Amino acid sequence: MIRLAVCGIDESRVDEIARRIRGATISHVDHAVEANCDAVACFGAAAPEISFIKSTVQAGRHMLIATDVMPPLAELKSIFDQGHSRNVQIRFENPDHGLPSRRLIFDELRGSKLGRFGLIRSHRWSSAPGLRSADTFHLPAPLFRDLELILWLTEQAPSVVYSIERPAQSDDARGTIHVHLGFADGGMVLMDYADCLLPGDGYQSLSTICANGAMYADDHQNRQLAYRGGTAQATPTDEGLAPLVTLIQQFVTDLATRSPIESGLARWEQTVALAATIRQSLNRGSSVVIDSQIHSPDLALQGFVG
Image (cartoon, rainbow, N blue to C red):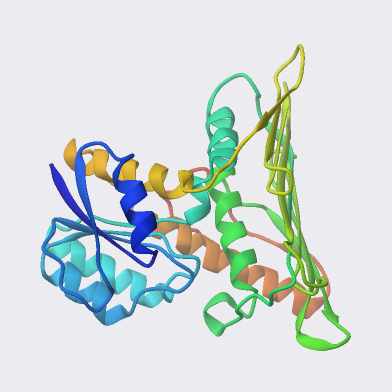
């Protein structure tokens, strides 16, 4: 039985998660508390303190880090190297990977029914300004996370990038960003991000059109739409704690079975490189052609930044 400590979310939610996890005992800890456990899972809006991560790894505890904002790439590499030297498993996970709607699209793209993707459209609209920092080349953190999600879904890098940005008239820290990614096999991804909406719930959606079918997911009406021929199916969902449960269960199962744990580091490296290319396109006001492509998230991008 794996002893797992969870931090970054309310203790009441941890208790509910614990009732749904198999193969582990779950406890709640604060970032500053030394936990008596085999592994630690970190969630929440902000990345955990680097000192907490390093002390946890130094103590020989495995880690799942699935926060909305990741530590800087240089720190991720340092943490990974530290874990490798101590035989500690570390996974840097985009929390959106656990969303049932996104997981459904991921699984369908890996299967044979939908066929090769032709178009993916991603929308994220919000009234809350996204955190911008030099670590993401001043792209909003939610958009940076969406870029990683696209690389996760497609398992390949684009061959050309074009982006435009329009600051909000009332606030230069907010605005809209549109990203167009073209792929060597003819596929494309269209992304739009806005954090200048009037106060409200916001909106997020992801749609995929493939050779043999299409899928659509949004968080506005909590519905997932899948078409594989025949009658389209619209499934009401309440994602709630499901993303956290999915990520924790996968992590626990991998530890218990001693399965290889994908760190996710290579894909975050790719995301940083893609963000740099998008910033280059924004600065130029033109498209940027990428010299080389990859077809596996385990390979680092070379020539991604022109």
